[in-house]
Length: 231
Image (cartoon, rainbow, N blue to C red; front, top):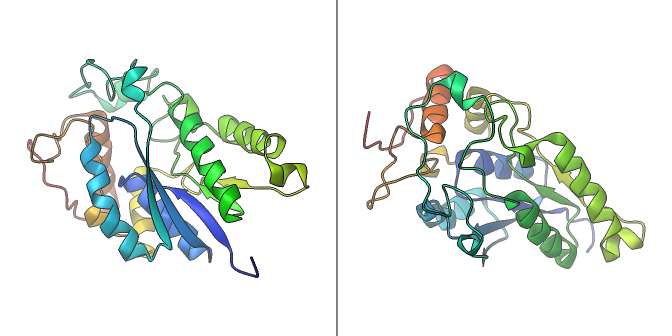
């Protein structure tokens, strides 16, 4: 593989994962972007990915389909309402119905398989614990456990190699993520955050993800390029 550094980046078309991809690029990696079509309510986010991949200079963009609607159990994959108009204090408490059972475990497993095939040394994920403490599969303990699992269950691990799990945004606020994205020239204008967009793909402006995004842009002093149904 020579001296080329490769990283697989889980990139959905959302704000955090796009900035995580820009972090990988800034760290000197050739980036291989992996998007998962899992039957998500906001599948419109994936339509942003080809242009995001082009702007970031990704070596390749791969979309894998794993239909998690068969399992359900989440407002993103089942007939469960997406919470709207929740306060910041409410958002910060408990595990929200938008949690998708085992999603990051599945996503990281797919990224791990591709990373091993490519000879990549790192997997980047846009996990964050500050603005969304309710997702257990975004916690550092989970990411550390998955990295240990990757060492135990792969050929590269058996041969004393290692694939790291990198979460550069883990302890950043949304405003800090946005500022970092601006510094890295990440295409924030292409990103989609809304969990419940309308048929035209416009953001609802009311779900937890929209509210956190809007708050983050306001605190960062950066204009939010998103078109919202409700302003």
